[in-house]
Image (cartoon, rainbow, N blue to C red):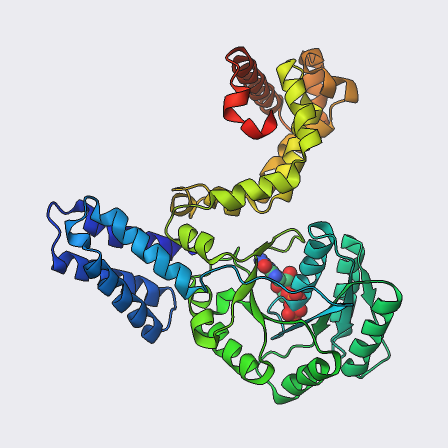
Length: 440
Ligand code: GDP
């Protein structure tokens, strides 16, 4: 995420770190590099200038020149300002109502339907709501079908009226149906066009007036940079939306949209979406994003993601197996499945401090576990729970079943043994309590 910006900022700070004696000229040149980095990331020049003027003032006021570590102080100043620029505190999301109505608007292809599904999934599985999705894109039967499929996939009801050509009445009917079915959140996926279009705006505004939504979320493709910001402005002028959803942050986006939208429309970014899988939706936290942009990673989010996947009971069971040196292939497979659910691998690695910019050119394939899974799947349940059973002939059979060479199976077995040895070592040293306090 935002790799090029991250790299350029890093190099801007290097100038300040490398100097023996810091002068005002060094500070000014760092500030100029930061401005250039922002403009290159597709941040509007006016915003970038105002931002760096503030940085410069603060840096002078806080006497970066005399600081013991001027580079560090400067990074902190920039982090605080980036956080402010992206909205300061977390914005919050209002899903209270009977039912709460959430209206989703944006251009065609921005990711509205995908996001609608993700939001329903998030509210259902993480917040305990009982949501209903509404297909109000009356122009594209394919969009309705897409929502129906998503709803089926996540186990959420979808209100569909294939013959009804009036989006307003579909929305109204859906709210009535939700009430009768005790659904407490209604998410309305509206029609988009390829560009700003008066008829589209009128239709969404009419739906808004008819159903009085608690939240109107504007969905925008972050890959479109400055265009995203202009589109946001046009939608906000018309709809006065309550928040922004940035999508496709898993792509090669430069950062301009994330950094300029709040400034331009004075509406907070509420969610970020980074993938096609239903789980890849996150609440937007400006400070965490600022940390990521500055290459400091985002350990808080990483730990939260892990906690969401690993419940306490499972963790206890696992720990007890590890303590008894009974960690087996079935456990390993379960761990892999949980890690996969946490999100896309490159994104997860990027949350580790200092890793982000270093893996930018690395192909981190989400399918990289597939080979390992295939090998585990080719084992019998007995072999999975008793890895020591797996001798030469069994390895041959596993290799064949998984479509792998015997050498690959051998290498995997060796790695697994090493992992178990390491676990044994941890047991001996009683490292568990120290390393994983939450797992006691
Ligand atoms: P809509 O026309 O606004 O409803 O947009 P869709 O939800 O149909 O999304 C358009 C395309 O973008 C689809 O191919 C989606 O799979 C894809 N898409 C949506 N959100 C994301 C995302 O966060 N990351 C990636 N990589 N693709 C996305």
